[in-house]
Image (cartoon, rainbow, N blue to C red; front, side):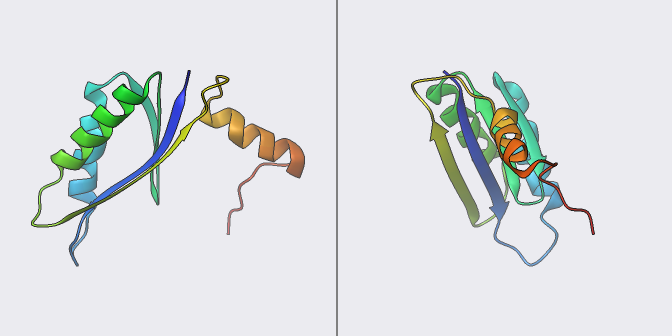
Length: 103
């Protein structure tokens, strides 16, 4: 089973969040997950929901601040194994091109 999630962890601040977001991303390295960071969050893949929740909790706790905002969206497809890139590949197959647009 592969569990895929979109995780966004950030301090509530008016300053740059890059330092704190980097701490959250670095915390994921302590877990058996793969991840890819993008401008809106980090996509995480894990073999179990327990590992995913533990990694998300560590990322949340790694951020310093009086207030931390965390959003976790989970796709727990229990009947088959599907990686995040396969979901993107399926959309690109329908589009007939990459699902990316450069300005």
